[in-house]
Length: 336
Image (cartoon, rainbow, N blue to C red; front, side, top):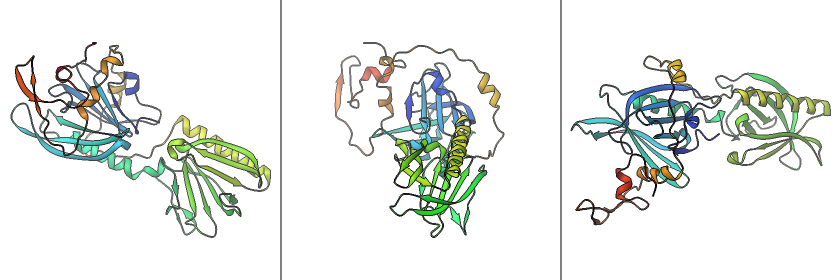
């Protein structure tokens, strides 16, 4: 799943569509991408995985910013083109060893939804990571009972299941729900693991020195863990494998990411967004290269030396590395 883990610029409209399990939480028109497209009226979409912005006039000019790339989200007052100040949404992100900053301002100065919605949904995303990340030795068991998550339904509980992470193994309880698999040791509840289906790569039965073993591997992004479990008799092991596989397949068709947000204002019309038709303009990868340089966050840097711009007849600050003065003036970069 890339939607919450990547920062993308000028993507195809198909990548702006909701993936399975992703849903629209808020939609705001009259939103300006102040840093990259100042003065251009756009639309801000807030989902349970990311925020997206696109130009109204040129929908192919767009952004997709996953919540998992956020380093900081806050507000700041900025000057507008009309000589007034407005409270803008400020987002600082990290992606592929680069830092990007985004500033979104609302052309409707009386509205604060552009930052209240994003900040509220982001907090909900952060607080629900247990739906999407592996947790080891976490406080998920209290007095021998699993702390059940909102939207979670327990489907099967099996005692006497051995975790084979050590040479001797540890016996414990295996729990299958509609969003994850949980195992915890009988002798020590803090020795446990919570594996959301989102993190699972494969579920198999293999031979080992312990006999037939249920082997669960996780995705590379989740740490590439390999966990082995054994239960007797072998029929019970096969049933456990069948049940996990079935629950995993059901989850994959309709995943639950755990992000819940309650509106403080009237909710949006979901159907309006789904049925809206936008004509996509074909733009090659070369044409949109270097657009992301506008959003680079350099932190605290000294002012760059001035240079003479022959075409302007003025001395201007030297552009950032990878940018030219011509690029800064272009809406759609032209072919060279």
